[in-house]
Image 1 (tube, rainbow over the protein chains, first blue to last red):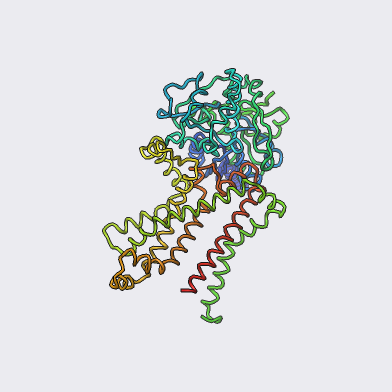
Image 2 (cartoon, helix red, strand yellow; image 1 turned 90 degrees about the horizontal axis):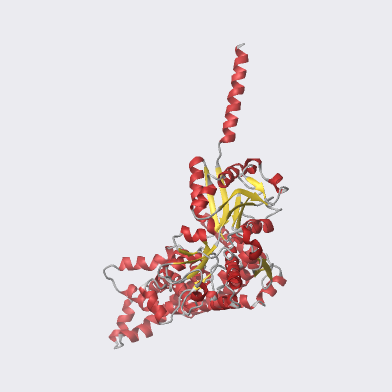
Length: 323
Length: 261
């Protein structure tokens, strides 16, 4: 009889210990993410590490294309990749390195400046292009070949030509902006604005808000921030780097949609999944994004219902298929 | 030291280890691209332009360091004064400061929000995104290496030789150019080489001050981000090739001078 009790107790202890081990997360979670997600992801890291003290979240912010190339070309170990354009994941990582992209946030293009920028007191959403064309005003945008914010800024300028009915506006703006004002990442322009090396810079609204810059909000028809204007956005076409130097591919305008994925051979899949759950939680990561000026997509979306079967069970309830 | 001495084998072992640390990744890099890709890359005008810009700005930075750094190094070598150690520590600062910080620090003083920057802009001097900016950064990071090398050179020359020259009626200036300068020439060449090498390899500070015009390390970064390893590696190989050739030639010249002396 005693032996029986002992056996039951042993089984109970083993089961409890193993279930505890299952819940306990530890190790390093590596995240490659778009530079524009730096501040909200830093906040999410802090919150996640408070709840899981044995997990060390290591983030590497970079241009979205660079994030992808670090996985595909350099073979750098990575658990989660978050891009400012879900298409970067769909085109560069799926299907070899990942099975899906989850669209979790949007953004919009704004013109950022500071109080000391030339003509800062006069600029409005109806005259910004005249100010950018004024002699002595220096402005810039991110490199369209390496940062989605770069080609999106060009798209906004193209759409402005149609929206404001100013034929030739895009060419004039493009011609007057010296190449020297271009930076590899849109966030690199923040320091240039703050030091007075640039008067205006094309940025994401979230970046402008997070760095407490002055933001000139543009009409929805041109700021790439609204799904309902997708048909209009498609009128913008920008050439960006193709598969080799000197070759270009045409990018069509589209509303800004951020994407995130779990890498197939993530070294710490269990902890990474837990981070994804926090990120996609409307009361967790998505709320942090919202608080920092970046509108979340609630619930998060995947391309279609076929993709749903690739989504890990733990996060399936937080996403829904798009149309 | 004979071949039976354990020290001999220790030195050989460490020597092999040092060469392996340097050559192992470099050989991997140099053999990663096909010959056709290398030829295609060297015909690319952007690549030639950026490698030339890298070498040209590095030499310009070294030349300016030579002009303003030599008299200062002489002062540090010959005079004892209050605060000398502090000044020597300040000179070493650019070596220890993280590279992006150097870029941010320079941008901070050349923008319109700083009085110095607004004077420069009034005078039409633009630092951000210009060759002036690149050279400024390269002087900042390379000059300490030049000054330290030349200072050591001056210190190794006995002041008695200068005193003899002075006692024979030569002025201080004439003594400097006819006695001290030729004797310290080798350390100047070594200093210039170190300064140039440091400048050619600089990336972190330059990319903040000037993404365009692109020096070779920035172009390698841009090619990697936009097109991947396949198109960034050949540029890196050509940069290593040109720099190796250049520095080998300069080393040979320097060695020859040493033998002549």
